[in-house]
Image (cartoon, rainbow, N blue to C red; front, side):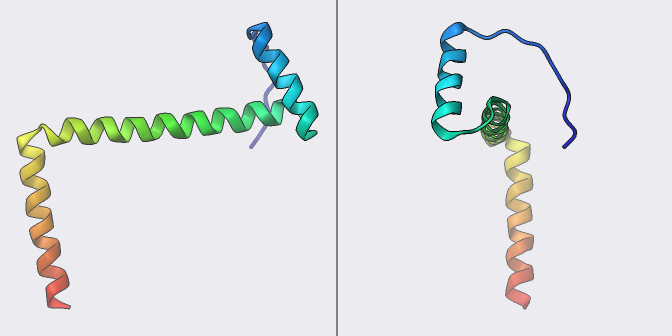
Length: 80
């Protein structure tokens, strides 16, 4: 992944925690921030999936399509 420089401000307490963990684990601060962002984005992606499934569960048309797909799948595996 290509690196890009950026400037941002964060609360003092957060920077202090970042400094502590960077020293404790002997990691560069940017590496900790990178890992934290990747973990946060993964959490957001999972939340989006969960939200879309909840929304689809309330949609009668989506439920019918899923049931039809399941019936087709069961036919396919029973033929094997």
